[in-house]
Amino acid sequence: MTDTIKNLEWRYAVKKFDAERTLSEKKIEGLKQAFNLTATSYGLQPITLLVLQNKALQNELVAYSYQQLQVAQASHVLVICIQKIISEDYITNYFKQVKKIRGTSDTILNPFKDAMVDDFSKKDILEIRQWAKNQAYLALGNLLTICAMEKIDSCPMEGFDSEGYDAVLQLESKGLTSVLVLPVGYRANDDMFSEFKKVRKDIEDSVIEIS
Image (tube, rainbow, N blue to C red; front, side, top):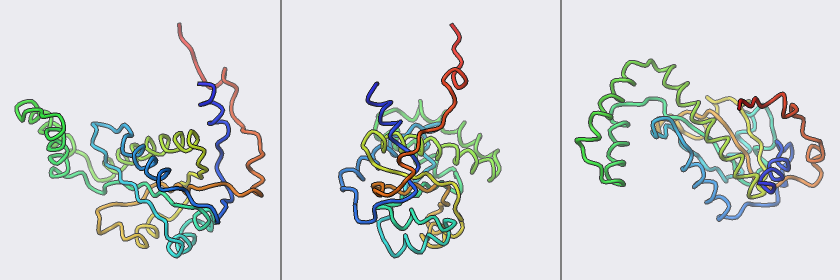
């Protein structure tokens, strides 16, 4: 646990990446696996990770990132996207995957599937997208922790033009929309923010214990 806490203290939102350094394929594969293992509500995984390593596109996206140059400098840019619609087919495919992996019978699965289809049919698009976005934040938190453990530098971003990203990355055709951006790589030696002390509440003000 001591090493874990030290790694979390080491992490910060990078303001300048070393554009000459690239993450290994092994590191990226680990991040992909961690994303896929993130817990999500119902286990439905209404989230998709787009892994971008293309300097031309990264530079193009700076204009839709409020000119945050980390997007261009980073080794890779991870874009967390959500499903725009949770359809009956999407839910049915999830239960097919459950059956394939666990061998659970339709007799057991169908009541749960029908209840889920009914539940989502009663939600409007805004409710579904907010629910899906909540799952994206779970994934972001997971990725930030894994990055810290693997000494991968990162900079989580909410401040970007989602419509611009969707257009550049052609997400509409995939039924997706971007909700969070995470440039990853290695901090530049002259990023002065790496030396700043982390500002957090005292533990006593942040945690309540009941015995």
